[in-house]
Image 1 (cartoon, protein in one colour):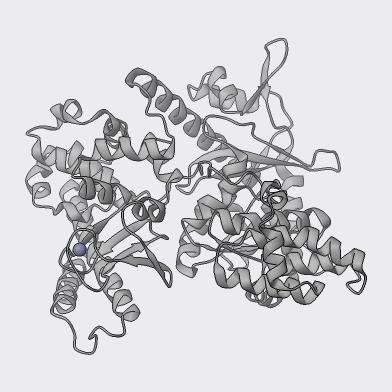
Image 2 (image 1 turned 180 degrees about the vertical axis):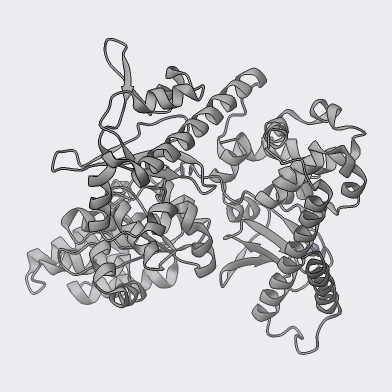
Length: 582
Ligand SMILES: [Zn+2]
């Protein structure tokens, strides 16, 4: 992960912008009076799910968190990065160290990707993988699911992976760092997984950061994960996020299940917004990563006591991470994998009927109590009052205080008074993780492959310099991409670009320059990219304007606005050009 990715993953644009402008929630977005121009009704919008903002008024512009701080403070990208890194608690390393670390991380991803491909090929065709294939077939997985999740098999051998990757120029030290090899006390290095089904764990960009591996017999432990590495932190990873991110954004909801199989079965059944926590407990890192895609989170954990306990712990996240959390109550003894396989319709109904996590907490706590007895009333208060007292939203808080009052016969004003007592205030947070500060999420969000590919083309092919110079910079929505583009445009030759670029952007530049681009039909490839960038830009504008007017019933939307007509005309031109090219 680059420093820029790290900063992005740790910051939420809503938090950043509300430091400057008071934001009001409005549906899925936030709005305010535009800080960049003077106006009486708000036309400045912030979109948490895309981590971007837009002014529909006089400015008619927008961007990401960096773009906001750059414009507001009148600073350039590197300075904005430094300030936001400070805020996020990210240390920007000094030059030499950074190059070395980046290279090491890059090598780990490469080794992991190579290992995943090797394990996958073994699963598909090695005779030794027969039992693994039979196991996965018995679990109901089809060929498409095996491919999509790149499931694999590790041979019963101490050195085949070591040899295979060794032949591909990875050193044994690198493979140990990547967690692919174990290191014995005598210093011998050997394959970590033998005779296992392999589940590659990917980040949102599809890079393999680690692995889960399952035994094929009844031995324990059933699963062995990669250790913590420079690119893998299990508590911040979400299994399947590479395949689920788009659906989570589109449906504005994420479903969290526990196991690899639950996630794969869900995707195979057409439920694409599902990720797995890879363990019973859901961490604040995982919630924080998900809430950038959607703030509507649904937990579908196993219906055992560990699952119940994990769901209760998530009550605290609702407040500290400002995400709405609901829970699915699965039939006794069933996990999502069972339910989806038996009856996808039932799964759909269960998810649709997910209950607010606090309602669930009330039921779980009072379930075993007899509330006609004073002692049980005290017990209910002991557990539920602290949970209710943490709610910040006034209406929700009142709702649960009233509910608690009904259950216990203590008036809600007395409850409020009790909740303010120092004993409660000082109480450790409802068995949840410590509230502040939110730790980094490991998946860099909002990478734009199209922008990066376009930049790589421009950087690598001088023959495009004229065509590239007329490309509007606003087509680049990522501030760092835009900064590299602007620097390239000002620069007479690509060679001196690296020296001119701020150090924080060199990592991105090197990555772009290292891209594999097949050197044929370069002009056509570029023209294609430019057209797609333009199309994306226009569609984003149109979509945002539409959403804007939908939220603003008082604004005249009946007659088409000149801007909308212009956007439509431009889009029509793009479609025609695309049709001609095809
Ligand atoms: Zn404005």
